[in-house]
Length: 519
Ligand code: BGC
Image 1: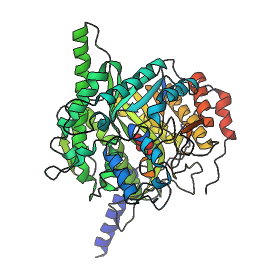
Image 2 (image 1 turned 180 degrees about the vertical axis):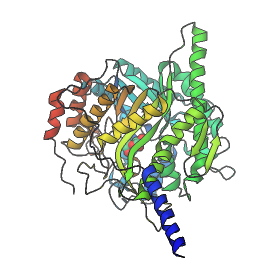
Image 3 (image 1 turned 30 degrees about the vertical axis):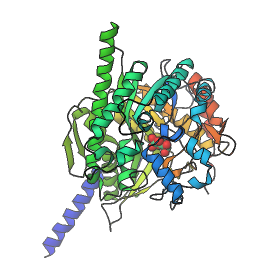
Image 4 (image 1 turned 120 degrees about the vertical axis):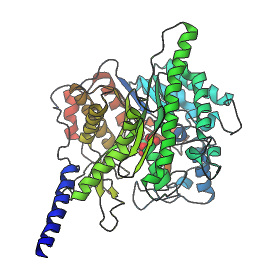
């Protein structure tokens, strides 16, 4: 009996040690070790820009998100979640506190994009801009075989205006919103899982390429598919507001999105080829990929083997599994049993797209180990925390960039990085800009092939389930005063970095920045 008990103890201990060693420990360092007495610079052809998405800035089109927003107002579901940054399922925080004009016009971008682009060049020193096409603006009705001419004219206006300001367009095809009609149930399926979803997507992609293909070289087919799935199919805070049992149950929707990516990848390449053939010009170079939401996932309690293990697993499934699939063609979701071979998916990323938003901690509750609890900061260690409770963490950014390079050996674009800081003196955004751009420049010195940085975002905007309450803009928006834009201090700071790089005086000025007291 004693021998058996000893064997059990040894077994449990070795499993624990195994998990502990295989897991992800908490990082102790705060930065990747760049020195503040030497300049950190960027090459001349580096892209500096901001990133935006149609549903968050454009006038409402008939998308699934617009349907959700209207329903939220009609049924008064405008409560906040239990804490900042925790959305309440089926709600959009405080949406009723903003006028109908704001709810429909969002940032009034439709009227002011030219002025916004001018500010991006003049104040931010930018040479690029990331935006998304709104599928439901181009195809507001299911029966349309040609896109809406007014929508084509609108996006042509955007592209012309970008060109006039010398801003290189970086276009996204799917940034969370899609036509409301796609979500009508057909044979028991909605959205991406409908039998006709691929055919509808192809019509949309073909239309975008026909009208704009020759004007755009940088493409992101899908923005953060894992955020879309987690928020929309597991947490019920984004349309389609579902709460499926586990990540494996989101596999079919993800596989459909991977198929959509594969189609768009090849369609973009074929379009460039066909244009060259018909014009007799060389084939226009194109860069196509997706972008993933990344965080530094770390254990809530560093000594806890299961939390270390869970942090590693979440890191794999949330960030890397899909990027791996774009290389291999096989979509396998770590720890879920879901795996599918996707035709045409292999070798469909020309660059790795990284969006980075700070540090998350993973807690395992032994009563429900399959559902880890995510903490967005640790009050014991994190001083730099944004308005949504997210911990800023520069070193995690450097690590993600390094890992992306080691795994894929491809050029990397940072297609989003920013923070919610509504203060007039946005010290946390300033701190983020300097430290995160320093992480990038440092990574480049180590050989990581970074090609561009896009700050999220140009102006305050509609922040999904947080409504208009979370402020991510380099320019503040006064929603009560005709959408007036005011540069926050970080706007000119970004301009200074884009023009001069990070000079020692600027790096040293970090010491003067103090995090505001947390409420
Ligand atoms: C999304 C943006 C969003 C931002 C800040 C990213 O997950 O791509 O649409 O506004 O993060 O939450």
